[in-house]
Length: 258
Image (cartoon, rainbow, N blue to C red; front, side, top):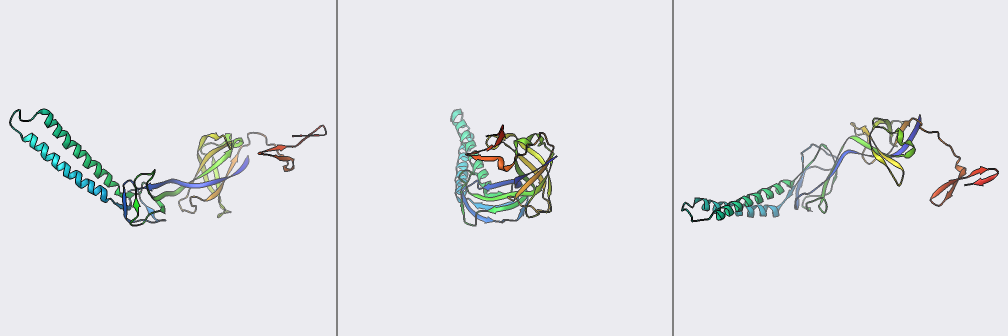
């Protein structure tokens, strides 16, 4: 067996940044950093005066369309109105109903809710902050992370890749707990090596129910791997730097070769 220790980055099991989905300003917020939240819990409420005005106008247009369509339906004299006029009135009424429902659906996003149970790790707005909808140019309001399980990401060199399997046990080491390794298992890997570094991105999952470890912590992952090929040990004095590469000095027949 060969013990391999590699640097790792600890991250949450789930993490997401919450953006506003409507334009407006923050009316109030109910949670701050470090607070535990439940799925569906309201984190903030956004006032949407522009959408409110649009809904009022759309409802007035809907009332007018309903009245106009009702009048067309009430005409009893045969031939007084054409079927085309009646269809146009019905279509206008249906279209106005759709506009009202669309605006009401947009207004429902004024409440920013937690997508899953976790901890608020960022709050970037305050009461009165102007916000815009969308995650491309929109305003990031909160960041929520689920920390009861952590993921340690480690880049495994090519020569150790054949021994990396799902379910392989590993130990996660952090400087703050020098005498206490945390137990984890390999949950997945990238299934392909990075062509620049010749390493395999590997995820080690470890429980963190007591929240002793924090996302973003630097750590190390130690694997006990079977030796798949004989290891060649070279003295450091035999390595000669040469640009971006290192060459090995070999003495053969009394001559030095690189």
